[in-house]
Amino acid sequence: MGWSHPDVSLDDMVKLIKGFVDILILASGYQSSGHFALWDPQNIKRAFQWGLFFENVIRHLSSSDDYQDSLKELDSVLLEIKSNPSFPQGLAQLSSVTLSRAKSFVLEHLIQTLTLRDAHLEAFLTASIGMDLDELSGTEQDCLSLYMNRLMLQNPSANMKTEKCTDDDFTTCTLQELLKRQFAVLSHDQLVDFITWSWWRSKNLSYLLDKRTVRLVSGASLIFSAPKVQWAQLFERLNISGETRGDDYCETIELLLLGCIARRWSCLLEYFMSDSYDSINIPKQYSEICNLLTGRSQSPHSKEDVLDLKENAILEYLNVLVGGDLHQLWKLSPVLAAFAIPSWSPLFRLYLSDIHTQFKGCSSTIRCCSCTQDRKDHIDCELAERIWCLYIFHVRGSYLMHGTSSA
Image (tube, rainbow, N blue to C red):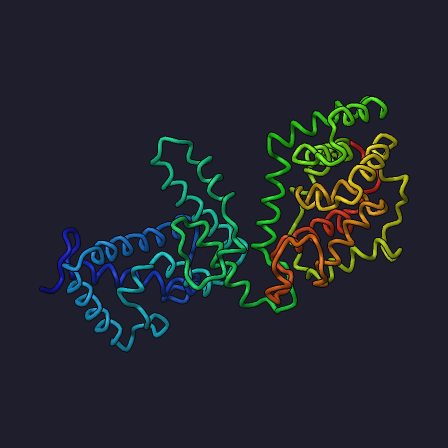
């Protein structure tokens, strides 16, 4: 039966494929003249659109057995094209199967072969976000809100290490290719990669900016502006001690922690949003944190520099309240525990002791990841995330923990 497609003739398809090959050649970063190829967001979006076109054509042909002859005819033509001595050997795998995932194919060639300067990286992300927003603009809802909601549901470090991108959105696929490229050059020394760092930062920042968190900070400021005897009586009337310790108990601990940092809340946000990527490895981060307890820290600040009298009272109450229920801290955001608990406090020692137990793979009633059972290093798990949060505040941002005034 040969080629059969309602919208594209075989001759036109061949011309389009040759144009597609030219685009992939440009992905090397150079034009045929030897000049640099300009890959700005608009050109990248055009390449993405080419990929989508071929995916749609192949999807149509694969949707029915009636078009199987068309796919065979296409592969036959592709073999003839590739037999030309001038055809780039780097594209020798080009086939109907390759064209069925042309979007990923474009991304692979653009990201894996192109020199990723800052301008190129920015262009990739701009084009990817633009493509996703263009797709969502056809809905009746706010496309930006839809995009952000979809992005927040993603866990890049969990699903971006596969060989092929299976997601429909361009942002996820682009981040996956960037992660694959980075994994190819990183050594196996438990480095925190950029994508994992971005995910941790995004997740913790989402907690800090959440409307519920902002309301709790305002409530904490109001509650703890009263004398200790008054707010302590308030918590006692809530009956959060004893055997009835459920969600209210955990939320009370959260409120107390937020009370410890309400004065420095603006400073926390400003620092966390401006924090830059650091590829230091997790074991070294953990070692630097432990130095805080052994007196080898470089920080010259004393306990009195850290909290005012009101915050000290909150921390003392918190130490008694938590007691042996340290697992409650693991129910809360890592960024909150890291910033609210000063390194000189008994609670910090207990928290770090739990982290130590899990980091060393010892038996523990608290188990936040399966790395030990899977015999994996702690690189992109929750334990590594909590170590990272402690590191950026208590080591890199130690000035925030010592004598920072309110904004």
